[in-house]
Amino acid sequence: MIGIISGNLISILILELLKKYKFIHLPQSVYYLNYLPINIRITDFILVDIVALILSLFATYFPARRASKIEPAMSLRYE
Image 1 (cartoon, rainbow, N blue to C red):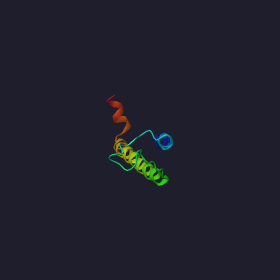
Image 2: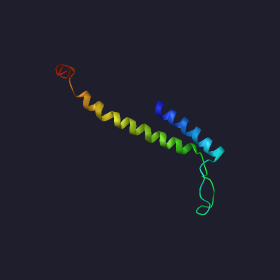
Image 3: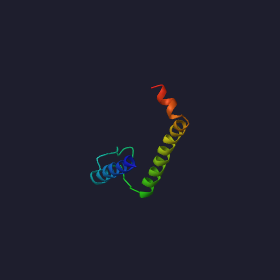
Image 4: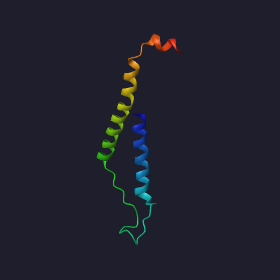
């Protein structure tokens, strides 16, 4: 959760800086706009947060399940 929250805060900060200063310029000969347009939508943040949380839970579930099947006395014997 700390990683998700800090990632959101950092990305909002960077997006606000991009929105204000427009320091990513696009070649006018190729594109209609000369800068990168920024549109911040809360639904994008929520969707990425949910996917990150689900992936984190799946990444911890399978090792924890495998570790729960090992008896503590057996694991301590081989250390």
